[in-house]
Structures are given as structure tokens and as C-alpha cells.
Length: 208
Image 1: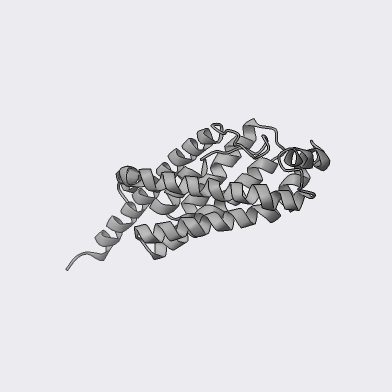
Image 2 (image 1 turned 45 degrees about the vertical axis):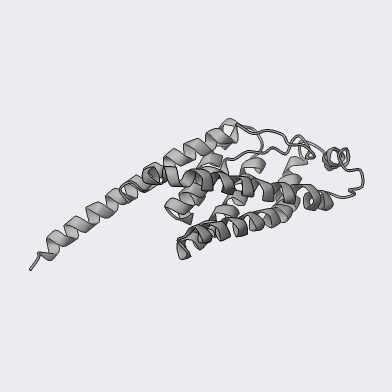
């Protein structure tokens, strides 16, 4: 008969080691996400201050490999670091974190319930839609009111109207421009994740 004390002693160090490795992977992915935030770029038919980036990709990798909590942590850490070196009054970072979390949490939860390629695909599609829809009230009630302290809403609206003169309100701009933009952003992150996840899986799951 085995000694219960020895069995317990063997389990807890292994659990601790697994958690340390998960945190190490999370820290690595957070650093990559932070760097990717600076590799942003403008896209056609969107005002120049709305930038495209793929910094949710590492968070999505973490959500699939480690769970949605770790994916959310990646979103949080990258924005906390970004906040320390920029001066956007936290509006951009808050928006980026909340949108990223609204993307990776549904994707990670669904993948946890359906650990298959189909489950991952359904997860990222639902996550992308949720993120796109959530971007409308988040930008309307939180992000743009903060930005209006630096740039008048009329000026912001004018940048949208320069692209499509028929838009008459900020809410309409967010529905016509920002929501589809955010949806595409999520789908790009999802596509890239599907392309590289298998090759990175041994690194992400090592020792788990």
C-alpha cells in the first residue's frame, strides 16, 4: 500500500510546477502581445485614428492552451504595460482590454467544452461577434466620451463623415464603421491562430 503522505507530496509539487509553467507562458505571450500593439496600421475606409493590430492573437493562444482566465490575463498585462508608457488617459487601454476579454473568454470557454477544431472555430466566431457588438456601447458610453476631452466629438464625427458623408451621429458611425472593423479584427486573429496554433502547441503545452 502506498504512503498517502508521499502521494500528496508528489501531487502538490507537480501542480505548483504546472502553474509556474502556465504563468511563464502567460508572461511570454503578454510580452509578445504588448509588442504587437505597436505594430498597428491604418486600414482603408476607416478613420486614421482607428488602428488595426493583432495583439489579441497571443491572448487567444493563451485562452486555447491554458484557459480563458489566462487569455484574459494576457489582455490585462499588455494594456497595463502600455498604459505606463503612453498618455491616452487610459481610454484606449481600457477599451482594448474589455474588447479583448470579450473575445477570448467566449472562445476559450467554448473550446474548453468542445476540445476540437470545430469547437475552436465556433468559439472564435462567437467571440468575434460578441466583441464587435460590445464595441458599440463601449465606445459610445466610455471610450469616445473620454477622447472628447482631447478632441471634440464634432471633429471625430467629421473624420467619419469625410469617408461617408451620410452618417449623422456618433452611434451610427460606430455601427457602420467600428463594429464591422472589430469583427474583421477578431476574424483575422482567429485565422492566424488556426495557422500557427498546431506548430506552437508543443511549446504552449510543455509540462502541462
